[in-house]
Image 1 (cartoon, rainbow, N blue to C red):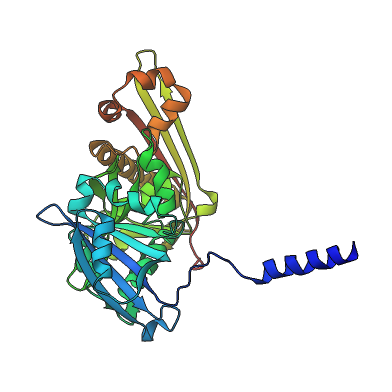
Image 2 (cartoon, one colour; image 1 turned 180 degrees about the vertical axis):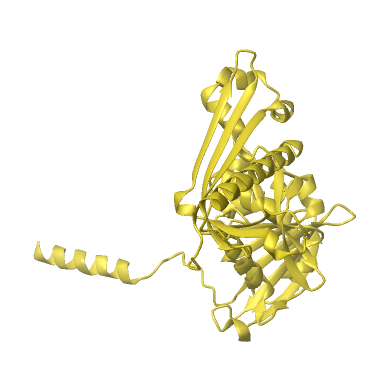
Length: 373
């Protein structure tokens, strides 16, 4: 009995110390940090990859290569790139995927399918973006300052997520709304302006197709209206009559994101009309107001009233754009599926969504004005 116990102990020890039998060594792998997809004039997929050497090393001293190839599928274009580089191309788990506008207007799912099916492809931390123009041209920049282009864009997206310009989105989070008939989605929208990679706002989708965009100012309020805000949301509004170029006529304020309250209510009246009440209570702090007098109660009341009216009007314009683009990013269809299933089955949502009656209301409440007073 004692010998059996000793034998079992050494057998267990051998199993634990033998390592993973199916481990995949990265010694000979080439890490693709960023990938871009465009449509060629012949209807093929043009894939562009940023391949990084010594990614774990100092970013300022790391080297990158940019390669591209066309194919009839994502896998074929990737394999053709593999014929141009040494080692096996692998994708970095904190990477980036970008799609050109022309491709996104057709349907992005066929270019994502292989990524979800491939068990070794990372999804949980991969960022996505749409490019106004050719996405491959952005990667051809290779470096921005001392940062490799892929790392620069990833940092840009993350910083703008913190500022509520972009909603938080990863490849993993994208799949559920992309396949949900009652929910659409938005993605970061970028453009190459000269040598600068600039944020254009957010790209709207209906189903899997790009249908329009919101600019950077609209994007911030959209993120708050969607209920998915992050650390900081900042706005600039004109609140005094006078020249547009006089900074005294403007106020800059930040939302206290920890105290925001948002309420979405979907109802159906007796005639079967869909009504949506979307209310946003926005406590804010004034961070810049050259006209001063923010300590006076009548000034605060006037600013609260003026800003609430302006932002409610902004909300109406955002919703109008979403409906024009068929982008049900607030998930009204999902609410109908859950609470009004019979009505949902009778609707052609592609047509019915445009007729949904939204009643947005944004209430601004100044709760602080900095340390000046």
